[in-house]
Image (tube, rainbow, N blue to C red; front, side, top):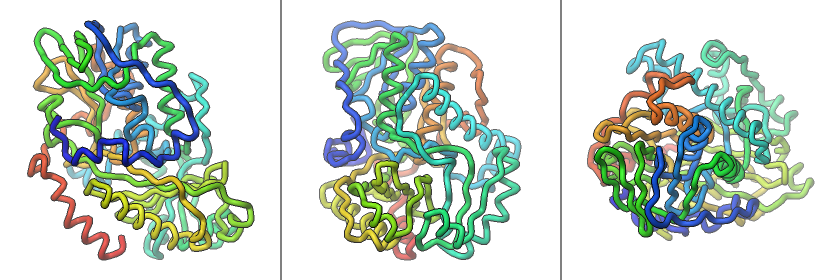
Length: 441
């Protein structure tokens, strides 16, 4: 495999202290063995791959899922658990300039459709995912940010068909959101969940639909002729169609088309021990609302119903024990500055995972044009709970040669351009990240 980071990033070490596995015990999937055949082979057992497999099976296809580790081992089972609007890191101005205003609006409505699809899957299959939060709240870390909320109301109403609620500093204290914020705005779309329970819920639904799911089965080689032959250490899988759903954990040579079309970067999370009511009252943060701020190194956080605080932070382009220690120190420092009353509250859980950024800052769902019959979905820019689930549904239609029944915006159809510098492409972000650290963003 030709991967972007050192082997440490793809080892067990970054997720060793992940909180989510302590909440859910799922049996491992058996490895693939022998010669197997299917209509569609799906590489990757996360949100994208499992959603694709489920929708394919419901349409009558025979599907095999091949996961290199265990279901939910990658970003799908270690993210912050925000099922919310997102998928692109491009601004409205960037999207309009590149695609036009109609395409921009179509993509924004697709964001809402993605949340609704994930919600529908949870409800239809009776998944217990520890759901909480009524929409998502963006916190203003400056007066200028707070003053800008009023200007956004009309855009949000137009793009998503909902009216957000703006909160003053006094409102925040009354709502149990006391912190170093100058205001906030809540969009009534989305919710928080346990992502590992969600991805395992998808796996349960997939198996019930007749899909064969194999773990510990990394694909080592892909041969393409009239169909596809995927080789693992113990199996040979023949399929008419193929879906690659590996996102930030992709390899530049499986298939070669992937090379430099995605840029993995890290997202980091810590979770506190359960806190007492006195500790929660001391900080004045008692809401279970899913929140984030508007800094470059995005912070995302919420008090879960079991009284543990989850606090996440973007950033990280290096991999190794030393890098993990440094990042855990950084995120803990940010946590203590934002919630000073909890500076002595332990955070026994800390981990990170890889998300994917495209050069155009937009997600891609579509064909791998060098391999007719192969498709991929990737680069959700840290908002994959909803958008990856939606991408999987689109991929299912494409793999069956059907026009997608759901909105399939132009912005998601443009193949990602390659990042310069090939496997050294992380270097593009080093000066950007460095400047953001120096300016406190």
